[in-house]
Length: 297
Image (cartoon, rainbow, N blue to C red):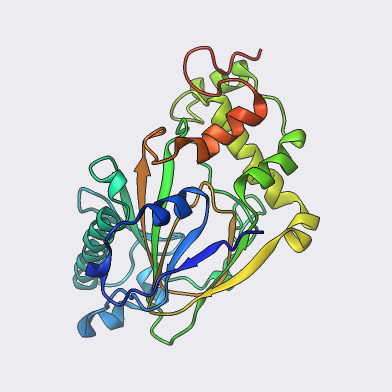
């Protein structure tokens, strides 16, 4: 398969100047990797790099656009310091993406920024929630109608431990493998889920198929062990960027990471025909969102 990693030798966040080939790479499902571009944790912030900064029962610490910190442990003073650190990463990540992928400038919607201090290997999760299994990202409760999920990651591990991913085959190859096994979309089921507030809006056929791919991949033991994939250790002090709804990935190990999610409206890509929405629409042969879509009974 085509290498899933495009390595770029930046040493300064201000070096980013967009090139069409970088946008084309990320829109094809590749991961842009910057092994020497780290997010600087300031000396007085280093004590925050401990697992106790995560509140019990929380999966991640998150900072909303409103400045509200959720999921954090530690003292009130430490939480204020942590919010400032996460906020600084958010600003840096946004500026970086604006320069790296200028085609999206002014079109991205900012999601909460997260700090993930928990060790991946020790998390106990169900198969469906287990990110150590190859998958593409999809939201069970929040249909997105083809909105793209662009993510900026930074490994801030103070002990130099890499964050290890498995990265799988191209999205279209995965879709061709698993779509024949997908359960058919039923509009009445989507309406019931919406009426019961299981979903925040009516689930489209696109969202249904993305969830089917996510689950079918995770539950297929043969695919998890033998499917096309490579292991990628993202070094401490490195950054990587990808569309997590398109790059097939699994997070195998690591601890202490910053993450910024940015949402791009469907059709605003430089090449919309490379998107999961366009690929699934071609494979299924009918519209998957919008008027006239998802009318199966």
